[in-house]
Length: 499
Image (cartoon, rainbow, N blue to C red):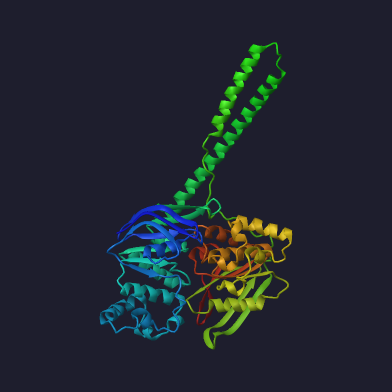
């Protein structure tokens, strides 16, 4: 159905993929994975034929099939009603309206949705409406760019069911490991290795869990072979050097009256030089080089378990005069790890902002806050190093560079302005700032949503071992399973613990 032949893509001199080929069947579910900034969205636009900023060679055979494209965001759709978003401004096409009514139950809408302003929809509703528009356009191939962003758990389950049961080709980019695990039957992994100077693309017709398991085993085997070969190479080199030094000493000290002995030593040295050249030509297994091999950890900075970090009592939580929830009561102690879930638009981000207002300025805790909108707490005009080491002291800059290197930032990225980074890199920058500041209380609004599925396991592991207090909002099912000790659901009637 879709054939890609020898596809190469280059953006601003950076190679995204090189000579990539694949064939996709009519009902395949292809997941494109990789670290942030690797060109996954660019690849979707190239497939769509609407990428004017990239150098592209190779061929994409999809005729006579048509594409439907779900963008990462629809923030530019201002002052437009859902009806206009779905059907345009032209004269009504009653056949399209008839199709719309057939989909109402599938999407959980009623016809009143048509009269709502698009920008007033929740994140989940926007995704549903955007997918509905693709279906009304009768697209044969769906390209979905981060469809899970900002979705609540209920809508995530709906999206999974939709992708699984949609009987046409779906190509999607996602950071949601559970969605990947449940939906993908083939994987395209885009990497930037060798300090992000070389691209590597891997296509396998397997599910996500099988792919990551096979990859981990292959990398482990490669690592063992590389270490073994280097150890053996080092031993051979040391042994050869010792013998050569011994022969060189014998050559210097041999009597001139022993020409035959000198000849034998010279012949022996020639043989040793030949062995050295052969050793130099040895092809060693490459060391493991993967993007997601990030490394960071919090220093031991434990809070007493019985310390009261937060006491929250809100009669009503409002935004712009609208009541979102009521009777919110929460008490949080020193080493609690709490996650808050709830439907889109219920006020979770508003609640965590309220907590930040209550906790900031306290001198008995060290607070770190990652908002949903990163720019609220991050100066995008600062460089990466200025953000992590504002004092510009040599020891602070050196430490920041070390930590950034462990998080796989290149030297070039360390001096870039934050506005030029991907959201995934900004999320990692927040985490490094918390580590360097020695925080012991974390307020995190969707901390894993922009980070690649291969890096997220490390982040979850570090957060689960954090000895301070965490209060997080998340819809990431792996995060919810592994990090918090208590999960609360936020509803219009309050905040309730889940058993």
